[in-house]
Length: 95
Image 1 (cartoon, rainbow, N blue to C red):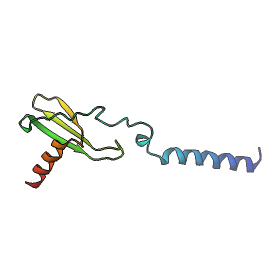
Image 2 (cartoon, helix red, strand yellow):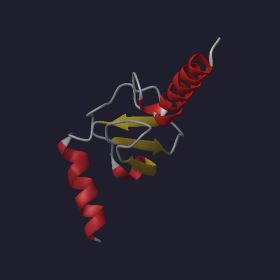
Image 3 (cartoon, rainbow, N blue to C red):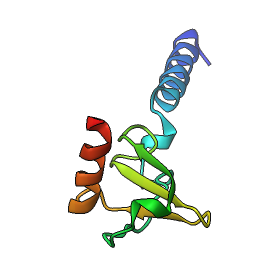
C-alpha cells in the first residue's frame, strides 16, 4: 500500500472515532433513563408525602419528572400538568 492509502485509512479511522465519542450515548434513541414510565394525575394528600423530587429535563430524560415517595415507601410519578401538583408546588415555594 502506498503512503496515500495509509493516510486516507488513518484519516477515516480518526473521523469515525471522533464522531463516535462526540455524541452522548445517553441522549440518543429512546428515553432509557427516564424514571417515570407512566404518570398519574390522581390526587395524593400532602400528609402522605415523605419526599417529593422534581427532576428537570436534561441528558437523562427530555421531560420534567415529579416523583413522590409516600410514607409507605411507594414511589409514584405525577404528571407535571396535573393542576393539583402545580398548586402544591406554588404553595410550597411561596413559603
